[in-house]
Length: 454
Image (tube, rainbow, N blue to C red; front, side):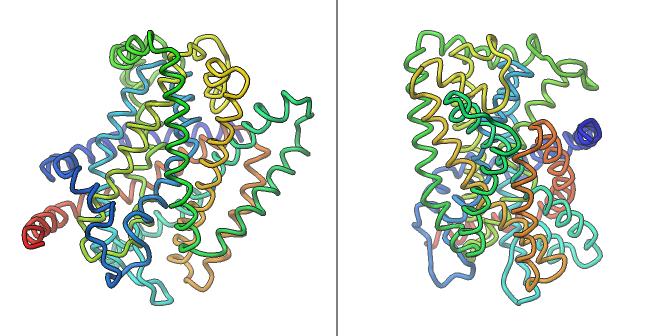
């Protein structure tokens, strides 16, 4: 089973998908005349609520839409995913994660703008956004198979299996084992049931309770993590420039790469690794974030697109870079066989021997638990589209069962499963976005004209 899932994941992440994600993102960047970078300041103003209007259609504010989306993307992809990338590909893998994020900003802008432009109604008559709705509303009923494809794989992709798996590993490695507690199936099941109880309290409350929880947790967790990593970097300040430069120099040498070669040889495999881990971290082009942004209270699609594009910047360019530098400057990536969250824990323990790993544990817990809340919302939206809004709550039971499965399964199985499913979600999302890109460009021009009259 383990080998079968790995083969599926590697096959899904072939050259065609990389061309679709990165080539498609570059195309969107060019046709928008690099809008994500030109309007970065304006995006911050929108996020602050300068243009909020409670009478606009939608459920939640721009800020809550972004924090709900970020609570899923700023998860263990930033702690475990970066560690996986560096342990396999060395410092150069981070460079390709940056490329993925910069291109991903344009992708996220377009997909989230479309999520507002083409909101559809579910079977209960509620306004909804997301790839399945903008495919149906924007391209028509003949494209329904693409919308169904996204929704089917979206239900699997929204399962919180990687986060739960890594949270369990972190609790075992950081808290239980050092304190002489025997870990195994029994202890993992106890942890799983605690997480099930905690998650149930929030997810059955719907989007409002999810966005309220996320808007309180996300800013706190990013700030705490930022302060801790800053302490590690200051403590190792003399080697920071050296390793920062290595991210650039090793991006083209693949000297440290330990994975299997790809079509372009070892360098091609390193590029693929960085893009794959970048996509896992910021989810640009996958289609999950437009489901959160599609619920924002706004009648200006471009505005929500601009808020959404801040996601990859915060997620990958800031949080992932912090993790990468912490792992690199402490040297643990060369001296330990640890992987995933355990490698990041080693970096924290290296600089803060007594309490470092416990502080990381707090970050891991908040990162993981906030992700548990928002992913359930994505899954229920997918099921609602497929079989009706009145049955969407059934997804939450599957979701809670997956928490128990994830806590008792090897990390590589969970990571490869979600990787492969994300790849299949990206196909309908990116195809529809590229087809409708000219409509978004037209919407941008209209928005810029209206902006002059504000």
